[in-house]
Amino acid sequence: MNKLVSELKQVKVFYISTIDGDQPRVRPFGSILEYEGEAYICSGNFKEFYKQVKANPKVELCGMYPDFDWLRVTATLVEDDRKELQQAMLDDETGPKGLYEAGDGRFVTFKLTDVKATRYSFTKAPVEI
Image 1 (cartoon, rainbow, N blue to C red):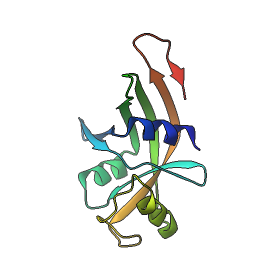
Image 2 (spheres, helix red, strand yellow):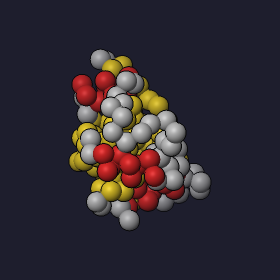
Image 3 (cartoon, rainbow, N blue to C red):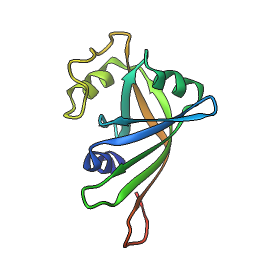
Image 4 (spheres, rainbow, N blue to C red):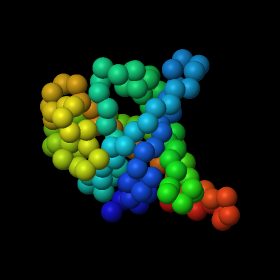
């Protein structure tokens, strides 16, 4: 399994920050999918998140593990509108079932590219993922 996807599934809820003009915006996410060896997230194209990513695709993610270590990720999001990818996201245990349908014109999936991920701890040295 893609290591980043594995780590984000461990933290369960992770927060993604975007830029809205000169203001950072942060919101919780839980959907993460490995597809063709890559990590993907999803959203709706009618949301502020989508508008912000289209204006600036660079994001940061952060989540906390059950043992209180935390994961920090920088990435660039690239939209991928393949219907089969959208269906795979909806079929995943973390997918937003019931909110969207693959190919409905509202549901969008993004591949995480240019990824740098690090696990931090209060008691151990940081570990690159």
